Amino acid sequence: MSKIVNKSALSEIVGISERTLTDWQRDGLPVVYSGERGESNQYDTEQVIAWMIAREVAKFQVESQKDRLSRLQGDKVELEIAEKRGLLIPVGEIEPAWNAMVASARSFLRSQPDRLAHLLEVTDGVDAKRDLIAETFDDALRKLSEYESAEGTAEAGDQDLCAAAENNGSAMGGKVPVYLSRE
Picture (cartoon, rainbow, N blue to C red):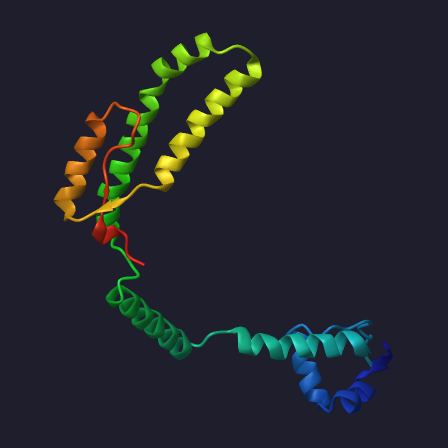
């Protein structure tokens, strides 16, 4: 329950000297009424206690330079361990596989307009045509989700990219090198 008190009473309530309360006012201690010369300031005990709690909590939220260094060193060790366990993949190893997948998807999708045009021409009804288009999209998404990895090195990724780019059939071409499929 909130109570309005003067500095002397507040000092007794919170167990802090009046001098410290004066110093805290410069740091933001809430004052309900700033008294004129010779008058006492007035404080809302609930607001003051909330301010004191927030001030103490903030002390623990500020990270010292030593704590930051320790945290960063710990993060570095965790990354090194994850890399040794094969849980991290260098960006340079991802790009060839990603390019192969994109080229393969592009090749598959570019092969579909002629096939779809023919099938749509002989398909009756809007719903049946919509289903045919949806099946084609689902097939493309399924093939992307089932994209398999292959044994090899970075050069294998380049070969897969070329094979995928040359593929103009309905199956997705290219395989992701096995070294990219770490778990």
